[in-house]
Image (cartoon, rainbow, N blue to C red; front, side, top):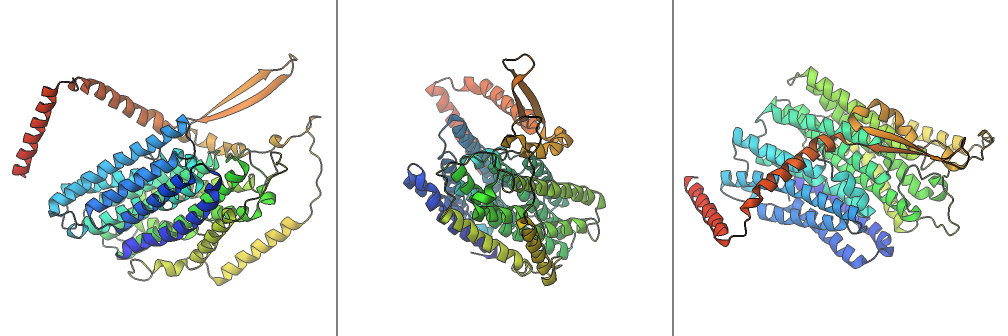
Length: 566
């Protein structure tokens, strides 16, 4: 195991321990827990095998174990038709990515004459290395859920049990980052072409921006976290691209800055995103819903879980002194460095900086929405008399991740020095004094919250006020829906049901649907093209044994001819 594999094994081990501890309590009320435990252990073994593999056969063996066990885990909890379709969509996208990776590995093996990773790296710059890079990028981008290849991500996470979602988002998506790092740093020539770096930066910025916009307009808590994962993986790929550009133009400081930031964000994102999924899982396990519009007053019912959600949300929002800030700070430093120095590309760097700034602000608004009303807002539903707050591992496992997240954030400057040391790196913009000021601000906010405030009844035109009259998460996201309607495509409809009196309506229903333009204008036309092509190829399956034998003979002769020519 080298230093790169160890960098990914560290968060894998930490998150795997706490997620497994959480799973013991979470799955106690589920059906067939032994089957779930078997799939879970194989899932862990598959990811460990991906990080530990040093040979193509073993890599794909572990990759397939990870893919198939995660497919079984996604469709485990809900056997409805929609959940089954979600599982097969995930499996389809995974194997499209696997086919691209297989092509890239075959090209590398043909060039080196071996299937061992140690023999790769002799490929010279040229069209073949660019083809290998494109195939690897496409395969790992699908696995990472980068926009527009993210359609499986937002559907698989809500369908899976929460501890599975935590490991999928925190660790499984990082296998794509690991593979991309392995290709860039070990298998391919580092300074092959500048467009490699710009492709990674552009794809990362697009995924970060669109993932944040989808997250802020989402009303389901787990789907929101899934879109946030697409955003953060975009940030990591943008950092990899910035480092590649630094290497190409001879800026060792930029390459070290960006690649340190990428590995640091991999580690911290694995901690706080797993923390968020486990916390949300405790809420759903107790309350029965993850709809942000239906939740409220959670702080008074489950303070331990809400403390975990608060720290995880502040980290995901990228606020200073929390785990999401160091990686984003290094990203902005890297993008600023692209506009000057050896790279000297101010226009694309400015565009990337604007997109990432908008993504950061939108992500902060998304997680403000998750805290303002579901956690600290008024209660919107009557609680059952037999209600019991989460306890045991449902609270202790997220709290353990909270401690790890805070410790890692506190030592973020030291953690960056574990990887790719190449000259001094800029310190994060806070000191011990800033930490004390932040703690003092939190103490003042807590004291202010404890003050008794006089409350007066709300005038509602003579109608008895109900909980659903208040501000909702959908209403909080409406400014973003209107401002970015051309990107996220919300469609609104209002249904008035007539009551018994002609001048009074019986009920008013407001429905908001989000038309994904990527699905409507990209995936559906692609689906129709594939179906038309398949229908034209259908006569080849005529059921004739002689015809099938002719196919086999033709393929064998072609393989022999090309093997001799090669």
